[in-house]
Image (cartoon, rainbow, N blue to C red; front, top):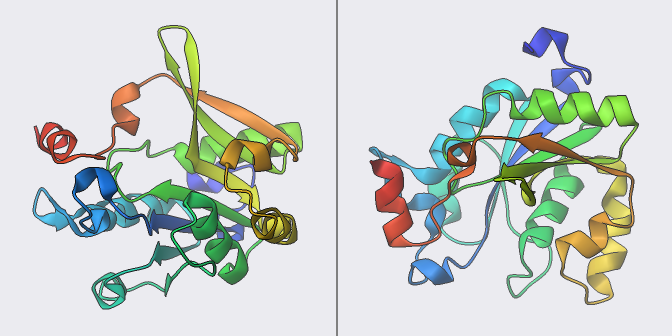
Length: 203
């Protein structure tokens, strides 16, 4: 499916690269700035996402100038203490000027080139508020909650959820009309949580 055939117009979707984590499994380094094939991981994600959406942003909490040098808006979490991916998601929802927001993590540089088109097609077809990637691993479906397309009108719901002290993605998405979109290539979603995983990606 090409961008021109998309079920939701490309200019109605803002892309968000999630780079606000602590990187605790990588020794506390800023994961999005780790070099992968000569470029920061987050820049790989940004360049892969940009053709699939209308606008792009980055969610980050450290080294903001380094992320701003990538040439797109950078937003820190509106909630303190590294509240997890939902806090980065909230930053995106608060700043997106479009009807839809799609998120990808900074540490998965090979996600599908038709990721957004497939999520958009499923959301439109099912009249869903959220479309989430799920990976088919030997017959077992595993949700990939950081690969997610959602309506920006959900911002108030997420604010209320986070202010109630909740942090779990699946508990929040369960409150809304959600569709899973199944992908069959685990390698497309391979991520670098640890230094060893980053080395494996570079092979």
